[in-house]
Amino acid sequence: MNYPRQLKWPVCLAGLCGLLSGFSSTLASADCMPCEATFTPYEAAYVTVYKNLNLEGSRSLRRQDDGRFILTNKAKKMGSSISEHSLFTWEDNAIQVDEYAMTRSILGIKRKYHNRYDWAKGVVSVTGAVDVDLSLDNHPLDLLSYQLALRCDLEQGKEQVSYPVVARDRIKRYEFKVNGKETLKTRLGELETLVVDRLRKDSDRTTRIWLAPDLNYLLVKLEQYEAKDNASYRLELKEVSFH
Image (cartoon, rainbow, N blue to C red; front, side, top):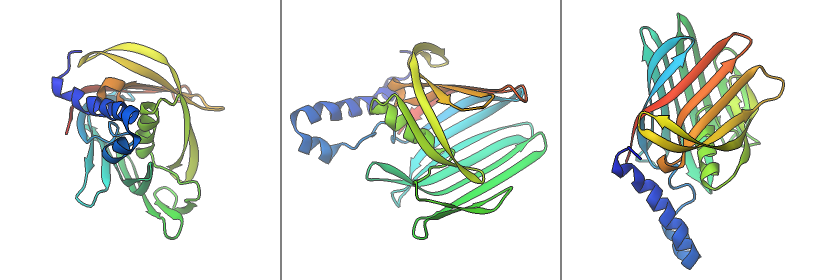
């Protein structure tokens, strides 16, 4: 591997947890949590190509002083920009979202969405193109946090998963399936990756993603194509550091 040596530490820590569990389940549960590698804070830079626009992007995961995590995604260039974040807690092996926000401006077309999750009332209030309250009965995620849930499940060896996700003014079911392994040439060198396809019914959109176990199952490449609009979206990892 041609990436910095320090990037291996979170993965080694996760492997140590698995080793400890073989000797003492009590010790392992006290010192290690499920998906520890997935929730290691990081900063990553990506190249994003959207509708023939080349955007410089960044993603980061941080843990705040109050114990909550914030996952951010940003990309911009020449007047076009995308900015979104998800604020959530990780408790009882589950992500519980508090807030999601997205602002996008592409070729002068602007979109803005803001989701507020009120778990006491059991609703998520969505503001954007349409304002609506949706039920939290199925514990839905958002358009960023489901990606962490996917990484967590892959870290635990699952090969087919699905998640309820608040997408604009409705809750959709996002399904994924591992479609093998591939050695991918990246800007960080060659990486062994899991190839994952999103499963869709009656859709002209295809999505394939590559995640690297040696980088805490981080997304290293994504390709999406919409036949209806003849539009493509591609994202590739440039660099990453873990904290």
